[in-house]
Length: 534
Image (cartoon, rainbow, N blue to C red):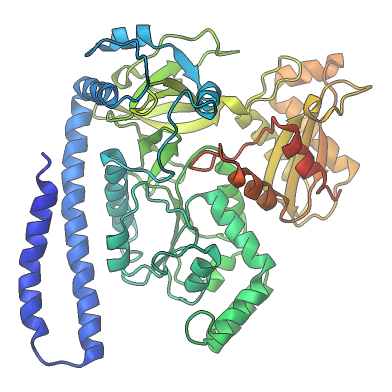
C-alpha cells in the first residue's frame, strides 16, 4: 500500500521522456518557457489527481469498515506514544484503553506541556498521511467546484501559514501560485498578490489572519500602492498602482472584488473562533465571494474533511484514521460528570457530541471542547457541523451561557445599531477586571465595529435585552438582580489585530489559531480596556 509514491515517480519519468525530445526542437525562448509551464502544470495536476484518487479509495475503504479502521488508528497511536510510564499493556483493546486512560481537558494538557510533563508538538505545521489526505482531497474538491481557480497564476497566498493541512511546496510552485517562494514577510506576500489583477482565489491560514490582512491593507494602503508604483519589489507598475488606489478609496465593502475582479473563492483553514471573522469578511471586504475550508483542524490534528465545498456552512466528515477520535455526548449543564464515550459508528443523527482526541505524541484522551452536531453519514462515519466550544462559556452566577448563545444575542443587538458592522468581539467576566465592586457581577463586552464611531446608552442597553430574550436563565438572574446589566465598550480600529499579535507572541498559543471569545487573563482584558474609545 506504500508503493504509490514510487509509481507516481515512475509515471512522471515516463512523461518526461517526450518532454526531453520536444525540448530539442527549435523554438523561441518565451514560447518554450510558456509551453514548459503549461506542460508542468498538466503533469502536476495529473500526479495530484492520481494521488487523490488513491486517497479517495482509501477513505472509502476505511469509512465502510469504521470499527476496524479505528482499531488500527488506536494501535498506531499506542505504537508511537512518547509518554513515559504508560499504564497500558502492549496491545490493549478499546475498552482497556478507556479504562486505563481517563478523560483530560485541553487546559490540563496545556498545563502538563508547559511543565514539561508531556512532549509538545514538534512543529506548527501538520504532517502525516491524514494531513496529506485532507490536502489532496481538498484540492480536487476545490478544482471540481471552481475549475478555473487553480490555473497557473490564479491563486495567491497572503499569509505565512497555509490553509492546506499538508502544504506541498513543489506542486504549489509548479501550479503557478502568485506567491514568492520561501517568503518570510507577510507584506511581501500581499504585495505579490496585489501585483496580480487576474487572481481567482485567495489563500490564508485562517479567516482571522485574513481579516488582519485586510485591516492592515486599509491601514498601510498608501505605502503598498507606492511600493507597487515604484517597483519595490519587482518592476514598477504605475497603472496597477492607480487601479489599487482607486479601489481602496471606495472603502472596505466589496474591496476584494475591486482589487481582483475575477476572484471567486477564499480558502482558509477552519478551526475554533473563526465564525465571526468569516462573517465580517463576507459582509465587508469579501462580499460576494465564496469561502472554502479543506478541513477542520484542532491542536491534535485534522479532525474533519470537507468534501462538499458547495455547502455554505462547513460540513465535515469525521474520518476513522489517526488521531484516534471518540465522541462524548453533550449533556445539559456542566459536563464534568460525563465519562462514557462512543466510537464514530455509534454516533446518532441530530445529536451533539464533544470531540475527544488521542494522538501518538502525548497519548492523552483530550477533550477538545469542540462540540459537533451529527447531520448525516458518509458510509459508516458521521458527517458533522461544528457548533460551539465549551471552553468559551460565561458563568458569573452559574448561568453557563454558551458561546453560540452569546454570539447570537450580540449579533441581534448589532443589527439594531444603525449602520454598524461587527468586526470582532470578546467578553470578560467582571471578576477578571474587578469591575463588580458595589454592583452585581456582569459581563464586560469589547467590540470593534465599522460604520459606528460611538455607542449611545440606548445601543448599549440593546445587548442586555437581546441576552434576556435569547437566554431564559440569564433573564431570570437579571430579574432577581443576581446579575447586573452587560456593559459594552467600543474599541478603536486595530485593537483586535494588536490583541492577536500579542496572543501569537505567546509560546503556548495553539496552532491553528484558536481565537478566544471569552478572555480569562486580566492582562489581555486590560490590553483591550486601554483601547476603548466609547
